[in-house]
Figure 1 (cartoon, rainbow, N blue to C red):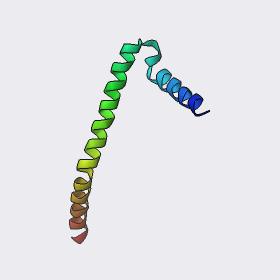
Figure 2: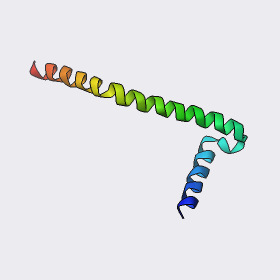
Figure 3: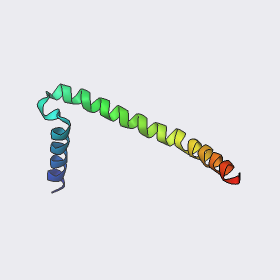
Figure 4: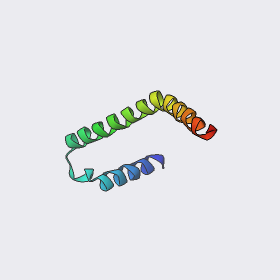
Length: 66
């Protein structure tokens, strides 16, 4: 049951992004770029978002105090 659900999700992903018409080696390249993009996004969010949000909150408190 779970395998069938995962296959359906993969099919929906390929049809939505247009990967169904590519060859397998082209799919690996595109999926690798997508995975690299998501991993860079996660890295940036984990490393920089806490400090940026604290900076933004301190700036907002400065504006609220005025």
